[in-house]
Image 1 (cartoon, rainbow, N blue to C red):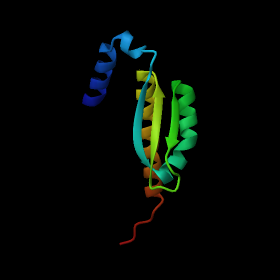
Image 2: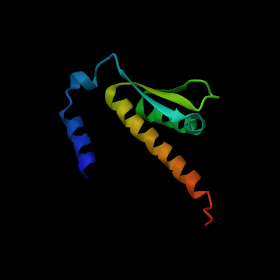
Image 3: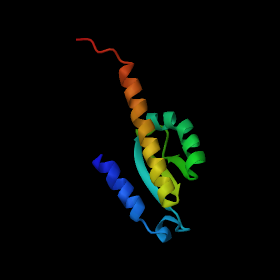
Image 4: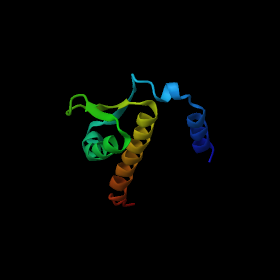
Length: 102
């Protein structure tokens, strides 16, 4: 669909000097601290497959922690999408485990 095609178009149009920039890039996202714990195992898998670094920073007792993804531009973009998919899957599975009584 529309957004997927737009992302593919951006990637196709991206010059190699940008995607291969040796300095790398960092994406930072806030995540609930409880969710950061659940995302650790997936982060290890994503780091291996996407050749990037993923670290959760901030006080574990705080409500919000920071997820930092560092590496080449396309690698961190893909890693971010995979981690957000996992985040939503964790949310959905915890919500489906709740019984709603009316």
